[in-house]
Image 1 (tube, helix red, strand yellow):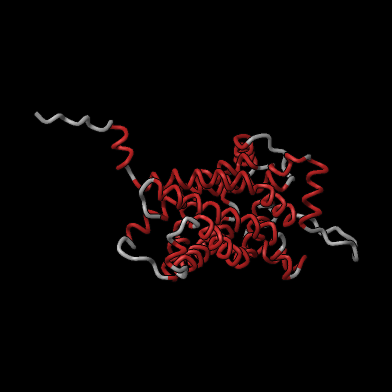
Image 2 (spheres, rainbow, N blue to C red):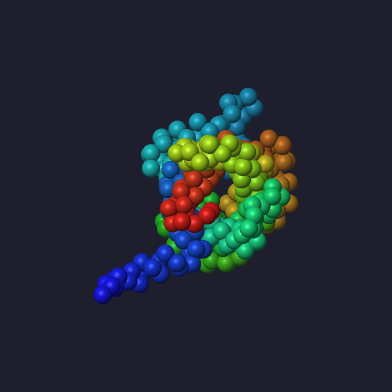
Amino acid sequence: MQEKKDPQPKSASSLGKAHPALKAFMCGSLSGTCSTLLFQPLDLVKTRLQTLQNNRHPGAPKVGMITVFFNVIRTEKLLGLWKGVSPSFMRCIPGVGIYFSTFYSLKQHFFQDRSPSAGEAVLLGAGARCVAGVAMLPFTVIKTRFESGRYNYISVAGALKSVCQNEGPRALYSGLTATLLRDAPFSGIYVMFYSQAKKALPQEISSSSFVPLVNFGCGVVAGILASLATQPADVIKTHMQVSPALYPKTSDAIHHVYAKHGLSGFFRGAVPRSLRRTLMAAMAWTVYEQLMARMGLKS
């Protein structure tokens, strides 16, 4: 008589089959946690550089990334570099999860049988980023204000309450246009360069044990190009979210930056932002793809 095999536990079998988009969300959230914690200091330095008042006397030395970095350590101690990490976590952990789950769902729906072309990759990345960007914008506003050093918020919940009471809920969506003009092109350009770089790799490299390192390298190249292309929109977004009363419209912020700093003002904070966005995106995509592979899903 043939013995009956014990059925697999329901929870294990349902976990294996349940909602690939949810698995993508979990993989993205975990990758977002790692990258946010590591690279938060670069984001803080970038925000401080962009919001510096131009009160220096003519001929005074230019304030750069290193100066701001050590000034924060001197005045706020080492942990001051992680100021704003709480709203960063609240924004990035679900935000990166939403981005990757949306990206996975769109890719499976439209490109199940083939790889997207360069133009389609731009639309795919931009579309996923728009969904995540709109969903998490209130936390982006709070994060930017924490990092600017101009607000004395004690907690994320307290900051949200303060903004809603003093400025109205609409203030939580200040800089929406600039944020989308920054994030959608960044993700679109990033996904295009990243996917094209991976396609150009020889088969023996893409199937070797060095795949995570190769993916990270492709991500670094894609991140640098995408960061530089979207830096002006990031400067505008920062000004609008830190001082929404002064810059209610995108055009107001553009005019102010150009009048006060010239064209170079639109690239203030480019070095720390490029470093952070490049390394963060490269790490997030590398971790995400490795986790998805372990779950038996094609990213």
